[in-house]
Amino acid sequence: MPKLQSINPYNNQLIAEYEEFDEKKLNQILNESANTFLSWKKTSFAERAKVMKKCAEDLLESKASLAELIVKEMGKPITQAIAEIEKCAICCEYYADNAKSFLKDEIITSDASKSFVTYEPLGTVLAIMPWNFPFWQTFRFAAPALMAGNTAVLKHAFNVSGCSLAIEKVFLDAGFPEYAFKSLIIGSAKVKYVIEHPSIKAVTLTGSEFAGSEVAMTAGKNIKKTVLELGGSDPFIICKDADLEEASEMAVRSRMINTGQSCIAAKRFIIVQEVYEKFLDLMKTKMTLLKIGDPMDAKTDLGPLAREDLVSGLLKQVEQTVSKGGKIFFGGGRPEREGAFMNPTMLIDLKPGMAAYEEELFGPVASVFEAKDEQDAIRIANDSKYGLGAAIWTKDIERGIALGKQIESGAVFINGIVKSDPRLPFGGIKTSGYGRELSYVGIREFVNVKSVWVK
Image (cartoon, rainbow, N blue to C red; front, side):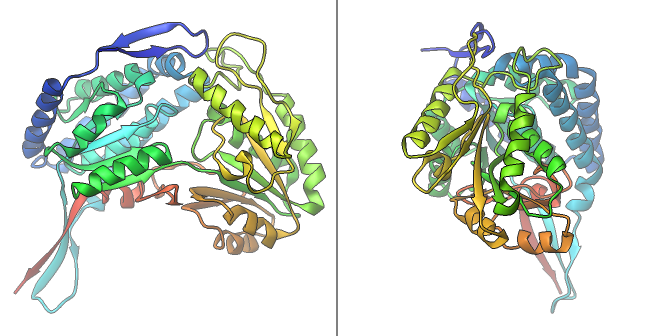
């Protein structure tokens, strides 16, 4: 059986190989997780919070080594990798402090002497997670799921198997039961088997549209709930009264975070014509200042993409766009160096039918559009199959809010870049998925909302 390989995208060196779990081992883990649920669901919120807070402490104490593991496995610049671990600790603290209040019984006035809604855990939840934020994507699911009384199993992307096992160790060392959280070292071919396993009660996935569709079909056939956070091609709208200096700086930061490999990164920059040329030049100027290099260097802005095949796919999307009339305004191609690198790039003159118009570009490539006015900008923003996040830049806050309400997305940020925050619901609409993570909404996704009526 071929092994799952983790390869450093900076130098193409093999980090480790992992034996894929066979069905016997999968069955053992899944059955033990289901058995652990029977006792874990009876623990108090105080007991759960104690070990979840220990998770937060351990994450912060080990953030240097855990961040280095992220860098080696998928190329994230080290300063961003450290910030990712710190954010996971914040998420653990947040749900440790708030899970009890989020899931407390709610009294409802009805024709009963007493009626209320109670929230009860479901069982073992399968998480299928991507490589781009290997710790954060997992913790933003696991912290609320475990605090709600569920158990969890993780099928991570094969190239971050080391991160997957490290996350499992964090939970175990913090004092969680051995099978409260387990990593499944398997390839995509075995996901269907796991979803269909009777121990699995629900599934959450962050990934591609194709993966989401496949998972949703299998789970739906087996009457199991899913939450999907899929691709995004977030619009970044510049109104004529925007602070162009700040907006252009944030535009580059939002597009290039994690070397452009973020679902909620700004990808389509829609600028009203009065300020189009000026904004374009400002954005280009700031692009030229980005430092490409060793992701372990704290001064590096852009590291390699996570895998070589991802560079090839992105280059093909740029080539297809240019072949249909799009233009490279800045950058293009890849630098003369080893590793899965690509130059920061800006594309203009984009029209329907081009890859940069229709598809998500997952890497350091910005698609730039000129809009006639604000309403045209909204039209362009909504002319997409995606609906994850959006940003609007204007000095007129009320107008910004009004424009934001017209955008088809799961989140709108006025004068800020789209980000995930444990306090705010996170998720999308259209082909960006359904369901929500984070906030009180996220912790209620994987519970039984039970009505109790008493006379």
